[in-house]
Image 1 (cartoon, rainbow, N blue to C red):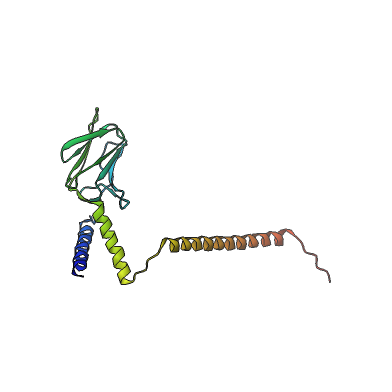
Image 2: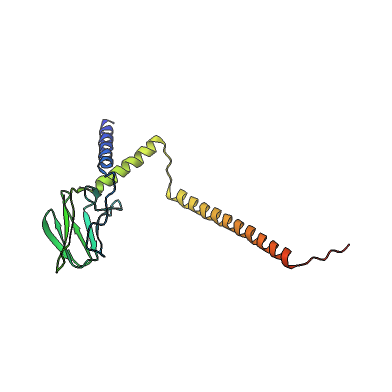
Length: 191
């Protein structure tokens, strides 16, 4: 029981660190590049299906970095060491200790984009933090849904929406038809 409590405290502390380290003001996602082109990057963690945009001073989840650019050929340097070059998209694994990613033009361009003060978190730690939250919700009795519940709710929402749209359509059409009939047809009254 004590081991579970220690594990819970460690996971909660990790979650608090993650939340505190996230930058409060959102910085520009696409870094400065020449006029008319875009350079941006993101990290991917396929275990927890999480993707993070690379921003200076931000915490990213996962160790696979993808850099995309439409500015022409470029070279990617990790902590000042040039590693790989490409035309439009480059994917590379980076160590979690990476602090700076620099993208520079190669082949005649004179632009450079740098993201610094970076922090990387392994995807497994992120997945554990999410599992911790899910487990905490189960212990506290928070509302949780299974896939079957979600599918049945989606079905009910679709049926309800369809009924409301049908009702509104019939009401509007009834009024239009009644107006047309009253304006253009004469009724003969016989006694």
